[in-house]
Image (cartoon, rainbow, N blue to C red; front, side, top):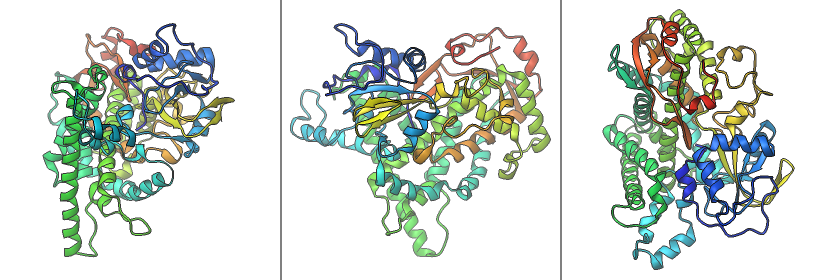
Length: 528
């Protein structure tokens, strides 16, 4: 889960000590008296638009502001944005030099924070050490490990994401999608973004925790959603652990998530141990958590509880949020491009004949593959991928000191006319003529830190779309306004209300009867 930041995240940036040297990447100067704050707020409010203007004026590597500033790391000293395949390749292949940081960002307590909390916490609204410590393992996982530790963790997690295991989740994806579609009715208006959120949440819960977690898994999932929403709320600016304030509620949620995840892990460990004792040579349960609990490295070592809690949070959070937005945006783009929707309908009917796709049939749906690829090119679920520079280095001919925060703009690379003809246009047919490298097109990142769940997400998105479009057609309502919101992921700001129709093929006539789309989504994608 790589990140773009919301306005609120930028607003809570604390003063940063002036480093010995700033990046030499060009950028705007600080504002008199206000310093870096206006630039950071501008980036937070509209990171896609702000980054685009910086690239246009200063080139492919630009400072958000030529002054000390930080957004995602307590040690951050400056912030730069980068664009283009060459820079993308250099950053994503040099794992030791360009590192990840924990999702809680500036809230993540390091040893010095815990030491201060031990002596001063619990008074005047300062959080105690006990209140801060759960943050160290909640929704951290692969985001917080680097170097050899990252390689070890990824090696232990990989078996849960190999092709055989992912293919085995197909039946769960089909059953849960069917359950959602059975609730839809002809003519009703639905927020399809909310529906896709519920669907991917259920799929993530079932495949991660298995049947035995049941509603406990769903409840934990909702706590994680609330945790993220609270973390990006404006009230988090006031870091006081006082009852009723957002920061205090967020600490409460962190503790609850930590406690419940640890309880689920204990139950899973007991279940895995019982299964092993009754049948030592039997297969491990199919859910991901059973596999993670049972995973052993070459030396026999396993993931400990702290590591498992962090991985569960990241696998769940990243596993449904990105798929949610990819599905919602694809439905929106198909409704606005009826010719592509008709082409997809014809392919689905010719291959599937109304049935859910098998794993083998997914490989026989090239236009579905092109639609999904094109949707994630035009509106990538994670438009900026963040890194922190581990040591003084040079990138794109510019000096970057250690602890520089770097944001790779996947969005702007996907919209580069040198790479994609008419880049702002949704055109699935282009994929029959092009084959970009993984450093030119990478919605799931690339290199050693490519999203471990990319294949899982792709299958989930394709199955849901294939089943949905064989039963229903969706159309935008006349009153729909579509604005973008970027807070880690690129999502419709106010949801996505659409009218549900039976699958009648009337995409063209339905689109012609509607007024043009309103909202700032038109700034980043070409629409009829």
